[in-house]
Amino acid sequence: MNALFNRTRAFLGPEMAGPGFALLAVIVFFSLASPQFLSRATFGSVAFQLPELGLLTLAMLLPVLTGGLNLAITFTANIAGLTAAWVLKSNGGVDAGPFAFFMACLLAIGVGAASGLVMGLVIAYTRAHPILVSLSMMIFLRGLGEFLTRGGDISGFPAFIQPLGHGSILGLPIPLLIFIICVLIWHLLLTRTKLGFNTYMIGSNIEATRYSGINTRRVQVLVYTLSGAMCAIAGIIMMARFNSVRVGHGESYLLITVLACFLGGVNPFGGFGRVIPVFVALVVLQLLSSGLNLIGANQHLATAVWGILLIAVMVLRFSAGRLKFLQRIKG
Image (cartoon, rainbow, N blue to C red; front, side, top):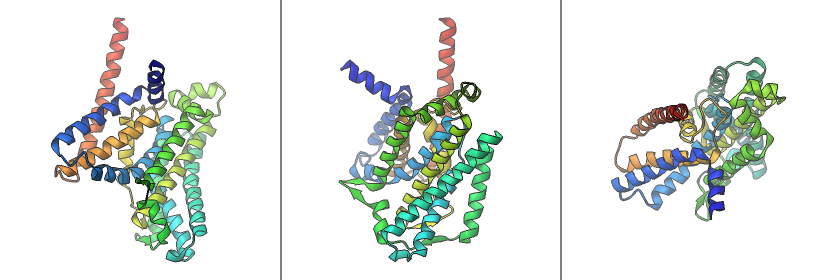
């Protein structure tokens, strides 16, 4: 029994304490405030809304672990979605076949990965700050998308891709299953591969990592390339969910992905954090939004509460670090 407990604790990590407590607090509060909160409808709504934000959060996670940031995640997802949409439209639109959709997905992921590759190369070889580089890429992708679409959207896709955004398998939404698979892949990447180990090393101290013989440039390029590829997967899911693609889809998700990372115990300066606590943090944010809707709160209040929550997380983390420091001095 103790061995099982120790394995579970090692799997989840100490980062699980914050999101675990927040999850319990949200469930208790809203179940008392609204009898409809603990219902199948609520959790079904969360299950369908979670994947889009979740996939973009995974795209944000890797750069944050290296001490960087990817501000271009939403527009990378949109430009990848636009790529897939153009391939489908050029192959018959609503009459496009499965092979056209397969090629559309490959090209979309390629475009997303290429966007991340460019950012990674610039960051790695010029040592420019990731915020400036990703902000520049965000502006470029937004302008490119608006120029190519003239500010409009692209719609009219084959019916067989709709289950990718709205379908279910054994009662579980297909987008949620895709998201869970991506969570497991990211978990294995960070805990079982050399790239994952090097990612944490760079986030802890990039100069020491460089002197230890690790090719930090290669790791940074791979991290941002994978981030862009994950953005593309999110863009494909959004295309199937909304049955249309435009430049502004999911624009409001950007700051929420950062909040989810920090609420999930990820160090904002890099080098520390796990995937599973971030997944729980995403569930907390979605439950919080659904709970506020059930009690009749204004829809925009959820955004305000998320902002307050981010401030609270930063204050608590600083206070906990200060307390540990004082305890070490006294000890």
